[in-house]
Length: 114
Image 1 (cartoon, rainbow, N blue to C red):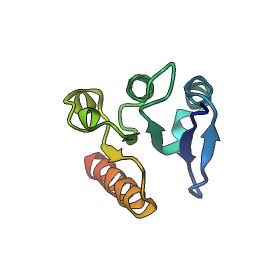
Image 2: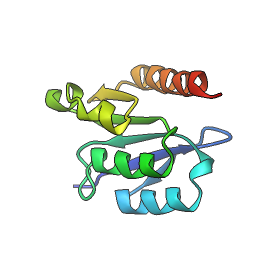
Image 3: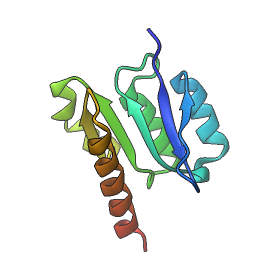
């Protein structure tokens, strides 16, 4: 099964898909300032979406991370907030819901800026 990680870099909201969390993490480590929001699937293998989110947020705590999951347990997990995940979207993902989640995550980040 192929899992895809999408990282949305700035300035033109271009989707930057990666075939693995490791590949995406490597790109993020090289230029963490290039990314406005990261959208990831919880079902990724090594690392899982939550592990991936934690690694990103260890590098850049202000980064909005949106997790997609088909598991109701993940949506209710207090670990999401502990790690810093801004939004958790239920799969299958509807583009309208994703757009609203991205907007909320970015607005929350802007509100937290000094």
